[in-house]
Length: 414
Image (cartoon, rainbow, N blue to C red; front, top):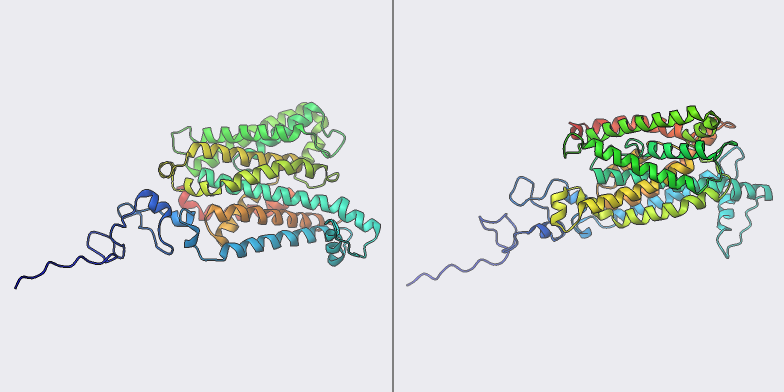
């Protein structure tokens, strides 16, 4: 009796030529590895043939279904609540404390069709709507922009220490604004309020010049742009631009007082004018960066892998740098140099919510807005009736945080 040939193994049976558990014909192409893994399947490790680079799964190249459901929604709700709490605290607290319930009712009255009895006097209503609310809204815009720009720079340069302040972007914008004030006479009568339209545009040009100089100087020793070289280049560019700023102030001593108060960072406004001036730049930056946040996850695995996935790395990088620099320039032109927001907020979000830029960027926008608004409350109340410059407060918080980040990133810098 003849022995029948062995039956064909059913689909999904492991074989010695395939990794255990993969169905027949399931050898993955590069595009399949990027986006076609089944939900819950772990990609091969880098040590195996055809494996993905380490961290691709966390970078967000896999479909959203492979992540635990509901995590991102909870964090978005937490971010929105943080913004609302910061808004209410910023309007309620100050030299004249107001009941939070009455302030909330008055804020709701700003919505068309809502009419509530807040119990506030006409003077208190004026304090809420004309003095504190514009300042708090400006703080929300600037904090969100600086945190969003910091997260964007970290993704573009693949550098955990990238920040508008450390890359020289803020220094470039500061030099341009100082030149406008000193040479054009803006704000010589005191504090820089009611910003002219030329200041944000000049700040944008200065920030682009600074980030370009940093990027080119960081690659002067070769094609490799290591995190250490980039940070050293940013320090050198910042020193060079600060020297130019000092020279301008020496030549135009009548501008020292307004420029110096601006350099320390402040959120004092003359009303809604500065808010309306920053708002278009903030909207444009936010839309461009958030629409391209998935590309940052692709750039995280390297330019060669990004090209194989159909992305144009340099074009995406230039677009994101321009958008982040525009947001930084708008923030700097309105409030001066406020450092460390772009490091504190994105890193905190990365530690708590995940490493994908699909998560980091929108949450940095929300929590950055809340962070700066609450920091401004501390600046206004810590030494009342005097006011501590908000840049001093963020530096006191950001210095130790930067040391912590530097220690955790020491493997990247070596």
